[in-house]
Image (cartoon, rainbow, N blue to C red):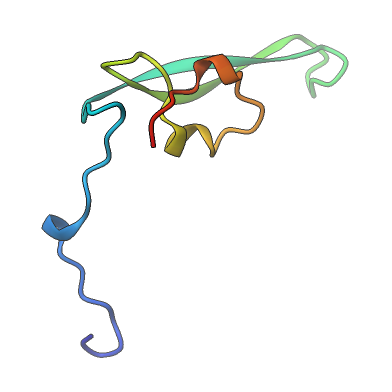
Length: 79
């Protein structure tokens, strides 16, 4: 610790993996907002970016936990 700051070295950070795979793709899901709830009174579609494991094709748990209401069948069984 120098000057009250924690020293961080990127090479010491842990790599994240899902089902023994380290590679991920980004993809988009969409939330539909009904005209009744939309501020424009029109149906709206809001994009939500997610990360998919390239091996299992599902959303890793560490990322899925940050998205409330995500369908459980899209969540990987990995860490």
